[in-house]
Image (cartoon, rainbow, N blue to C red; front, side, top):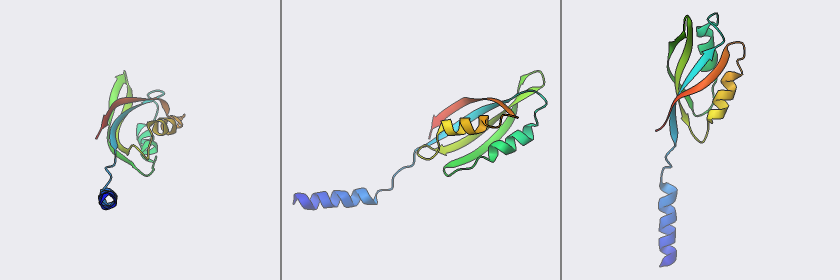
Length: 108
């Protein structure tokens, strides 16, 4: 009797679809100065591709005088993409990026 219940439990557990943990992240990407080509910067950022990463909407937000930062949203699968990976990859574009900050981080 107990073996039957254990077998039934294991069968139900195997048939369950595992929920994928996802997070919605908005990044603030600041350029070095106002001479940075922001369209080129956005293309570089969107060029970061990996399994579990989906880029969303973006906009340019004024920071100081004529300097604008790129604010871009993305959805990541927590098990596949780490926030550290995103930050390190984007800050690797040293000709364009001064810093990357997390504007918002929400679990979905």
